[in-house]
Length: 99
Image 1: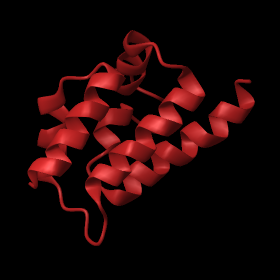
Image 2: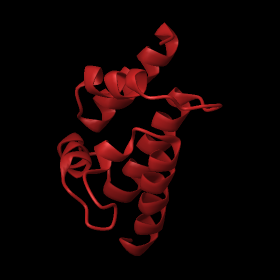
Image 3: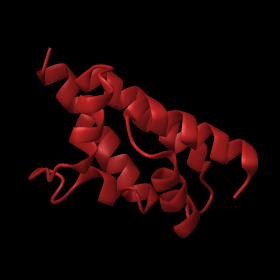
């Protein structure tokens, strides 16, 4: 994986309260055809902060906790573009409901 992308992903991980290596590992072990994986992580960060707030503990907890609507832990959904889109869409809809 490109060092610049790794840097962006590690930065996102830090903001989300997740080990940077964990997100880099997810990004490295999966293929995101035609997608900029760093951009996907940035979109995820934006949606999470909008829906949940910017408390790192809450963000990390949300990523790691099984979610019935997502049919599993959100972090486990990040193995594909469709998974990212599903999580981001859920967060975007939820951010309006939770306000």
